[in-house]
Image 1 (tube, rainbow, N blue to C red):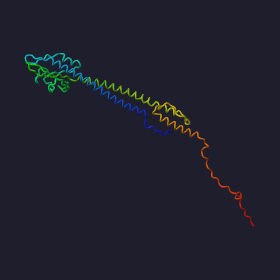
Image 2: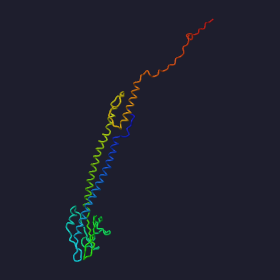
Image 3: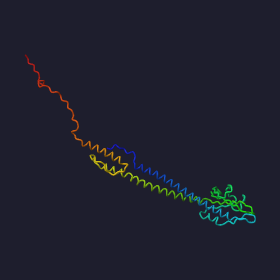
Image 4: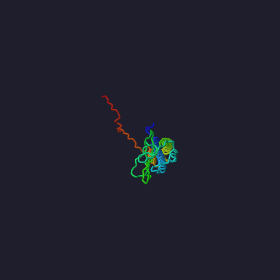
Amino acid sequence: MSGVVAKTSIRRRLVRQLALVAAILSLAFFLIVRVVAETAAEDTQDNILAASATAIADALYSEGGQIALELPYSAISMLGAISQDRVFYRVAVGGETVTGYADLPGAARAGNRRENIFSTFEYRGEDVRAVTLFRSVSVGNLPSDVMVTVAQTQLGLAAISSRITSIATAIAAGFFLTAIALSLFAARSALAPLDRVTQSVARRGPNDLRPVSSDAPSELVPLVEALNTLSHGCACRCRAPRNSSPRPRIACAPRLPQSAHRPRLSIAA
């Protein structure tokens, strides 16, 4: 009966470690895919908003001492091409609305920069993404700053984000399951040499003290050498001659003279 108690398993420990690594990589993959895809979707929306606002700004002109606008159809249609979201716009000069939604807020101008200003806020009960740009239009030989703001709701972006999340989740789950299967195969392959050494020793009888000659990786060479050393020592002790052992000493009583064994007779007078 063996006195060895198995408290753990190398195979299970290896599989757990590989599964943990696979879970971490799957989570990282999910987060990276989601962040990159959502960023790309937001950048696409921002670019279309900027193109729409630029198209409106390029259509501004001066007529009769006032700023006029012929709203190009392409400026609004390009926003509706990617989703069915609502679109709002506003053109203002000196804070006075020329056309569009008068209550649509615009971003404050920072210095004389002509770059696009993006912002996200709630408008009429919905979250919108907006862009504001400023252009200078000559009115009676005097430049006037015109603010153009275009906003779009984010229902389409939310739908794209949800679809991206579902795809990323499915890919991450598939990656994790594949990694688990590969972990089981890797654990079995890694422990195959140890199983071969174990079977080579288990097939031997109790009197078979030959050296173990199974192929083993470098990590198992010290174990095989220790087994061979132990087998060689046992074999040497078994082959030692029996008469070489010291004889036991027997203590003998001293010999007495023959006369000492004769009984003494008393003769009566």
